[in-house]
Structure formats: C-alpha cells, structure tokens
Length: 422
Image 1: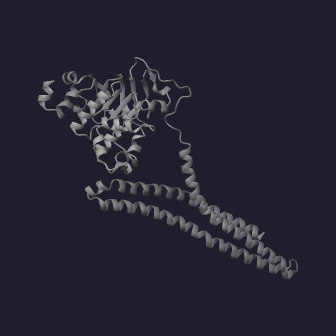
Image 2: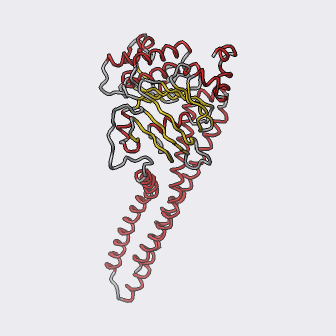
Image 3: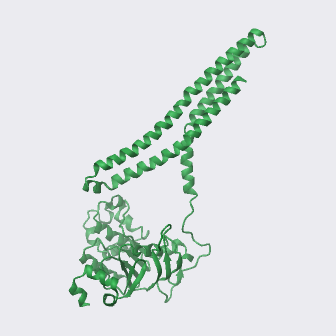
C-alpha cells in the first residue's frame, strides 16, 4: 500500500506541474515569435533605424522582447526545478515508511526481512522509472504547444478555393479582361474598397488606372489574380468567369509586376525563369531589352549569371523594377498587369519602356496602374478612380476637359501650359 500511495502522490504532483506549465509553454512560443519579429525588423530596417538615429529605441525594444521571453523561461524552469526535489522527498518518505512499518511487522513475526528488502527494491525501481518519465515529461508542454500551432496551420482553410467543375479558357472577340459591376470590401472594413466597378480591357490595347491614395487601384490587380474573392459582380478573362477557372490556369494567363519590386536570391537568370521555367537565352534577352534592363545586365561581369542577394539588395530600385518587369514579360501571357511598376524609373526610361511594350507586345492586353500622368497619357483608355468608384473613363484629352478628379491630378503634376494645351 505504501508504494501505491507514493506512486499516486507522485503522479498527482506531476499532473499539477504539467497543467501549470502548459500555458507558460504556449506563452513562451508567442514570446519567441515576438523576438523573431523584432530582430527581423531590426535587420531589414537597419538603414531606416540609422537614418532616424533610432538605435537606442530599437535596442530597448529588443531588450524588452528578450526580457519577456527570459521571464517566462525562468518561471517554467522554476516550476520544473520544484519537481526534482519533490520526487526525492516522496521517495525518501516512502523508504522511511516501508522500513518503519516493515520493522514493526518483522518484530511481530508477520513479515520476513527479505520481504522488506524486496518491497524496498521494487519501490526504488518503480519510483526511479517514474522520475525518468517525469524528466521526459518536462518537454511535453513545449511539444504540445508546438503541435497545437502546427495543427492550427495545417487545418487552416484556404480563403480561395478552386471549384470542382472548372471551365476552359476560350479565345474570341470578347474582352481580355472585364469587370462587371464588381464590389469588394476587406474583412472587417466598414466601407467597400471598390463599388460597382465596370470596365473592359481588349487585346492589343492599353488600359491605365489612376486615382488618389486609397482609391482601390492595387486592389483591382489582386482581384484579377484572384488573391481575394469579390463580394458581388463578375470578373471575366476572355469571357470566362475567373471563379470557374483553376487558379493555376488563371495566373498562367496573367503576367504581373507587383508594386514593390521583389527579387529572390540566386542569379538574374533564376529570377527571370520564375516567369517561364523553360525560357531560353534568346527569350531572356528579349525580355531584358523590352524592360530596358539589357544595358545594365550586359555591363555586369557575369551577365545573366550575376548573383542576386536576398530581396535584390545589391541592385537599385530602378534596376529591381526593370528586372521584375522582364520576369513578367518572359511569361508571354495574354494579359499584363503593371501595378505602379514604373515609379522608380526616370522619365526617359519610362517612355522607352512604354514604346517597346507597344511595339513588342501588339496582341497583349496591358493594364497599367500608375501615379504619374506622364506614364499613362498615351493609353487607349484611362480609368479614373475616386474612393473606389469610377470618376471617369476615356483618353487623356477628354478627361482633362471633363473629369474634375483627373483635372486635379493633372494640375498637380503638369504645368498650366501642358494642361491648357490639351
């Protein structure tokens, strides 16, 4: 009975400690996330930190993050440190009780000394194995916290899903891209980002989208790529609702240049082949020529095999932007989307790139999202957005005369002579 009582007491203590250590272990994992976030921001944003002479504040942030993690680890280690002496105390009390009661029974002649020794040995062995189990259990709360987080990720339901019955892309006289009364709002937003948006883009034509900050320009690109699903209306590519297409098939037909140019570590050729894995040297050279990147790539010692650092940090903003454009062009998709992708280019390079696009991609539908009027003045149609609604559609001269929102943008970027000349 004494060994059974001691084993039950030990299991009760171990259960109490493990129950208390569970929340601490989960909190430690969150603290570790916070440390990684702070350190990552400090490294990636080191130039901004230096520019604002903000090193002391960032050091304080890091110290605070590490201190929070250390405090939780100390609490957890103290909890487990309490387990070891408690186990030895239980073992000592059990030995004393066995010897005490065994001695009394031996004097009464109801138990032999050999039996007392056997019970003692078995009790020591049982408790020793339980101690080993308890030391192994120290890692259980951490393991459970990690597994819970992994399970949360593995059971996460994707926001965008392909339908079981998928349509095929048709080719005909229909618009390359069509937005039909599209309304969209982000989760938790009070107001829709886009309201009742309707326009069409045709093959071989350039459609430009301009508007103030927060007017929903970049949202149009993400909706076309189906990175979000619309609330109402319909988006079609070549007359087919994009929700009936597989995501792979849809994105194969769209060449996209993001607002923030991003390059992956490797070589220039590796980054270009993200657009087309089987791209030949001729195709890569052509894409670089159209994007006005051929000159500076040829000037590099290794050319297309020149190394690219993480995020393309060894290239300037304009060079990264041109390489991102080349990566989209090499895909040779029927629809090209440029999300404010000319902002880091000088006016001369911008103009040369647009001329090359018009000449080299005559059958491609081009959508240019821009802030600069000079980039979109020659577009076949310009869509002016104002607070998620279309304020005007037309060519540059007509919009300067008839659209107040476009007039305001033009006056802020062009001279009065250029505005009145239209």
